[in-house]
Amino acid sequence: MSSEYLMNPGASGVFVGLGWDVNEEEFDSHFDLDASAFLLAADGRVTGSSDFIYYKNLKHPSGAVVHTGDNVTGEGEGDDEAIIVNFLDVPDYVERIVFTVSIYEAVDRGQSFGQVSNAYIRLYDEEIGELFRYDLVSSFKDYAAVIFGEFVREGGTWKFRSIGEGCPGGIVTLSLKYGVFKK
Image (cartoon, rainbow, N blue to C red; front, side, top):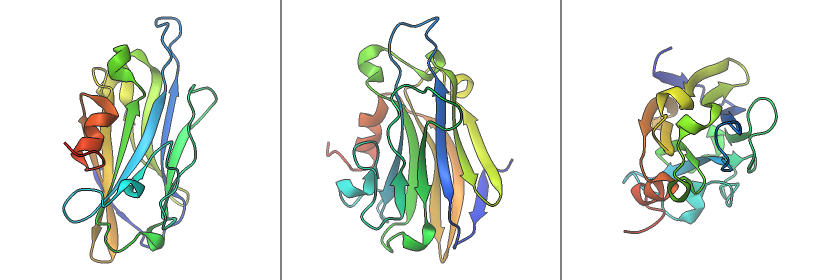
């Protein structure tokens, strides 16, 4: 698959899904993976904390980006967490929507994706099906956070670009990068 997709501007039901299973046979520690989205302005930063969608802030004020809720165990089949995007409601100041996945408290616990079973993140469209997917265990085994990809506004259209960049330091490092926390 290509690393860039042109999205239908009126698309509904486009989402990023995250799934994993706990590898209890090898590791005693609890693993909690979290999907997050950063709605970025032209300067590449959020304009405020409401532009950071994650397990404690499930819905952007515009309703354009909604997190389906925190799954702390990875139990069950299919996606354990999802973030849904409705392009028609994205505010004009948002030029990019970046999607990440991180392991909760991974730095303190010494955890990485290589210690989790069947971890993945994917882009899915209800009309088309799965568009892009990363296997987090093999591709990012030494990391506790990954920048999955981003939607980029170009004129009146949105494009998805896969990024696939491992990030040492977890969600705190990502939050600093995108302006949620100040240095």
